Image 1: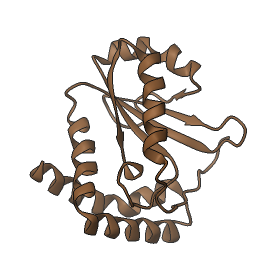
Image 2 (image 1 turned 30 degrees about the vertical axis):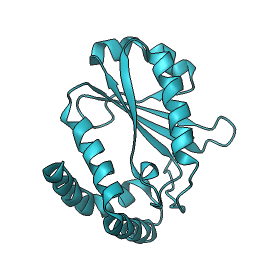
Image 3 (image 1 turned 45 degrees about the vertical axis):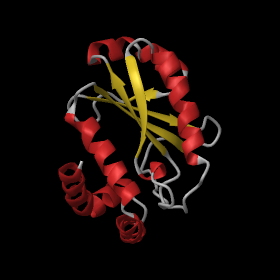
Length: 174
């Protein structure tokens, strides 16, 4: 399963929130007592927004060392532990379908109080309250998939400026 991951954007699936909730419950049970709560974030958490068909979850941990101790329990759920994966203070895990290899969940974990938590939640809530921006974001994501040839790194880089600008707006409004 190495190599370049290909990104695809699909229409909003009204089943995403229920999938996120069920997965959050599994994660909380496995990560107890280190995990305090799990938030559904990202585009799949914004009703009506086209997205990659991958659920993004953000788990708040009491502290990162406690989360690190919960690693074996999360790996037993099928998650692959990827460490900080380029973001200091984060623990990043992924869950893929065992048969197809298709990515199902991105799990971003931070210690409670980390500013990344507020940033992700503010962005999600801002898009939920601004359907005009959610529609604009969908257009940008589709354009970026096309211009990047579906390459994940190029896709993220393409939309980074827009996301950064809207995150700043969201935090100011939050």
